[in-house]
Image (cartoon, rainbow, N blue to C red; front, side, top):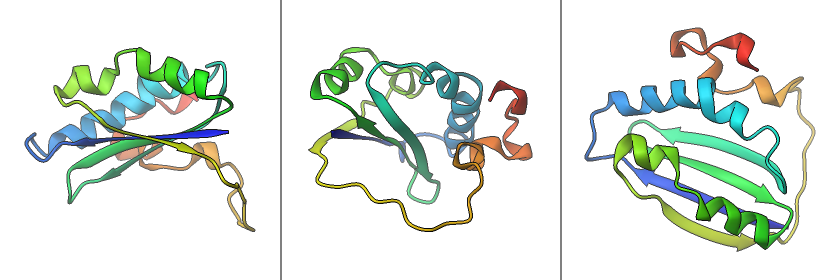
Length: 121
């Protein structure tokens, strides 16, 4: 298993860019990754204070990971910022005890103020 971490430093962009990217995740990106071959999981994240946006992926194979990097990223197209790329080999995965019923419904992209289309999930 392989992991990919992409981060975009958006500190030179307007603060509203994080909100716009959140809407993009909810309306386009989330659905696009539903059936990607070799993708185990993708998590989008942000730090609004640091103006950082990113995604963490788990891939079945290094080939699937590299396929992802071969395609241009929409976030780069939307922001004009190239991502910082980190590739990792996964050492282990563990899931702890938690009360999350549906982790795929978690996240700020699905909050009412984000303008997400809740029916798109």
